[in-house]
Image (tube, rainbow, N blue to C red; front, top):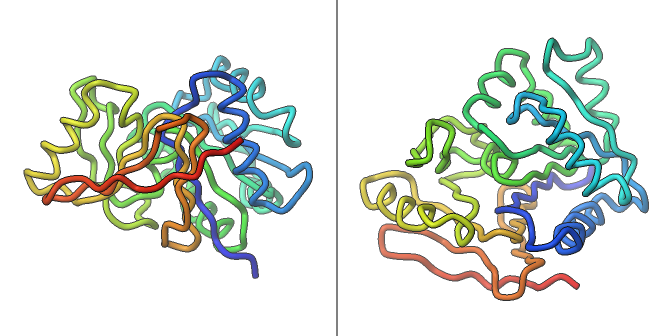
Length: 227
């Protein structure tokens, strides 16, 4: 059986080409020249804009389709997901997304796909959802800690670490106050997990990387720059 893989992406690159370079690497993990990829835009309420943006970024690299939960998901949801080589989860409101997924049992379907070797990846909310706890703007720009992720990956996570001014100090505040320790990713950085272990940090932005964030401080991790 293929190994379970998740790639959490802290945010897009500075250019469309940088972002495509990162996605090209993620899709190469499927081992397919032109993989079947299902995009899940639940975190934006299935907004047309987010779907179009994803097609602009990904459609040249794969056979892309998308999954809407509004007004309701398709009846063959499990079959659809398990037929993919990869599943892409879009950014947006991670708390709302997880609530909708749970109503429809989608987390269990994703778990089955992950265990069968379907590569799961996503940006921002699509990075956060796999962890136990997350730092999110789901409740407003002040940023809050949410302990309600899918929980496949232990600890907490924070995206946009160098892309949004409040992310680094707020994560520090939360961890110092007892929030679970974890990992943060700059924009353009991918966290490649095999099973539940971090295998590699990659970046499409020179100098961008990821950090282990603990109550003792933060540790800068080495990132391989993609070209």
